[in-house]
Length: 201
Image (cartoon, rainbow, N blue to C red; front, side, top):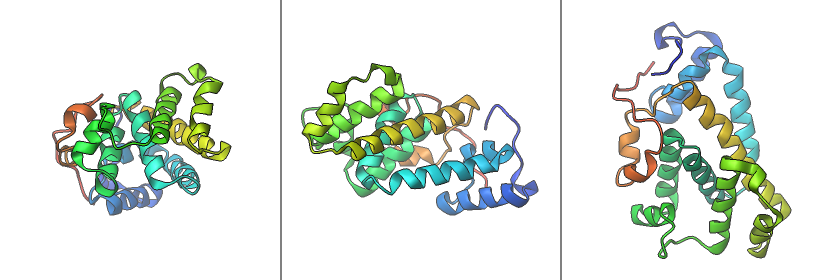
């Protein structure tokens, strides 16, 4: 579902069909967010290239932590659930993720990872509020200037993707209920999950 009309899967041709097929290959269905790009499939390609470039110089875990923090700050249910699921799949248990999200004392995060998430949140909420002390906090934890660039880039990029999806009314797909199992209360920070089952080509 979205606020704008999208190309039905059965009518997709050329770049739009290629876009749908690529997204289905990743998820097993064509996500709602992908459908809104049917009007500008080249923008999705540009987004994929940007994301790939950012990921080349940041660790997988740091990228996901920065993205989750930015997504929650942006009230993006879609991105919060998706990236929390990646963290749960590769790095943390459900209980550990709960502790991270709630910033509990038993959080498994290092001081550097906490500073990373704080900076990513500030980028998403109000980047003009960031001061030199925020940067120095990461440097104290061993982050280089390049590492800090990567964190800010990951958070800034998430602003584009999340705001585009939410701005066009793309709902998180029904299977995301399973992705957010045990964490839904903390991850459903914006739009509700679509009740309709996703489509496949």
